[in-house]
Length: 489
Image (cartoon, rainbow, N blue to C red):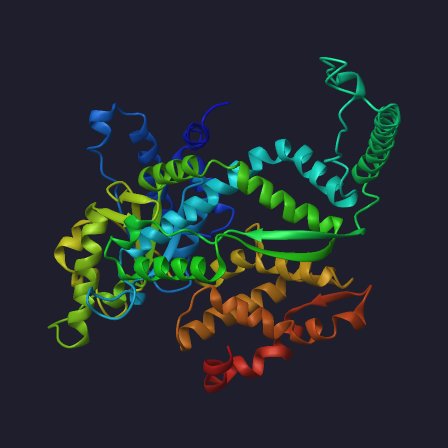
C-alpha cells in the first residue's frame, strides 16, 4: 500500500489551474482574477514538490493578498481551495492576536492550530483505512458483552495428560480420577454448547437483530500526557495546557473509567472508536501531519486591514504594528514549537484578505507587504451576480431552502421574477447602507420565507409559488424605508 502522503500528492497533480478554476466556479460566482491567482499559486506548489530537493527548498510560496469588500467571496475561495487540495487549512482573524507581551493570543498559535487540524485529518484518514480490519475485533468484544465469560472458560487439566512417574510415590484415588474425567467431559460439552450459542449470537449480531439489546460497558478515557518539551518551551499557551494535563493525571489517575448501560448500537460505536484509537500509529500520524503542514498547509488571515496603521501611529496603533512585526517572521519562514514537534513555516501558503476601506495595503509595514507579492482585487457584487448566486452554485440559497422545506412536505417554486426582485433589493440595500455583499441575500431570503418556515407543518403536501408580488408583500415596506432596512435588512 502506498504511503498516504504519496496518494495525496498524486491526486493534487491531476488538478490543473483550469480545473481548479472550474471547481471553484461550482461554488463561487465571478471573481475570475482571484480564482486564477489562487489556482496558479496552488499549482506552483505541486510543481515544487516534483523538483530536486536542492532546488525545491529554494522555491518560496507566492503568498496572496485579496482586496475587496466583505461578502464577495474572499473566505469562500480560500475554504474551497483547501478542500480541493486536501490540505490542512485554517481561517484566522488578524484582530484576535496581540503583540508579544500583551494579554491575548500570540501569532504563533495559528501554526499550532493548523497542526491540530492536520493531526485530526490524518488520524481520521488512518482510522478509515483501518475500519475494515477492526470489524472482527469489535464483533468479538460485543459478543463478550452479550455472553460474559464465554471467552475465558477455564480448561481443566486433562486426566490423560497427568504424568505418573512412580506408583509408589503417586497414589491416584479412583474416585478423584473419575471426578476429573467427568469434569473434563462436562467442560468439553460446555465449550461445545458455548461455541454454538456464540455462533448463533454472532449471526444475529451481523443481521442487526440485537441492536436494541442493552449491555453494560466500561468506558475508559485516557487523559492526555503533557510533554516535558512543551513545559520547557516557554510558551504560555502550551504551558497552561501542559499544567492542566498534569492536574488531570493527579486527580484522575492514569485512566478514567465509567460503567454505562447502553444498547449494542451505541456500544459498537464506542468500541469501534476505542479500537481504532489503539490501532492508529500515533507517531506516524504526527509525522504525516507535520509533513502536510510544512509542504501544503494554508493559513487564511482575514481582516488584515484592521491591523494596518493609517498615518502616524500612536496608542493602540503601536500594538497593531507589533502584531504585524510578529506575523512577519512566520510568513517569512521560522520554526514554531508545538506539542507535536517543531514546525517550519517556510513553505506554508498564506492568503491574507481585507476590505481596506479605511487603510490601504501600503499602510502595512513594508516588510509584510513584500511577503504578499500576489495581489488581487475582488469586484463588488451587483444585481446580475446576486441572481446567479441565488441559482447557479451547488449550494445556492434557493436549493438550500427548497431542500429544507421539502423535509416538511412543502414544495417551493421560485419564479424568475421573484429571483430578479430579490437580487434588485439586495443591490439596492447594499448601495444605501453598509455593503455586505452576498450576505445580504441570507437576510432577504429569511424575511421572504419567514411565514412559510414558521407554518410549514400546516402546508404539508402543498406547492407554494414565490413570485415578485409575494416578495414585495414581505419586504418592500422594509426595503423602501431606509431607516428600517438599515436595521432589519
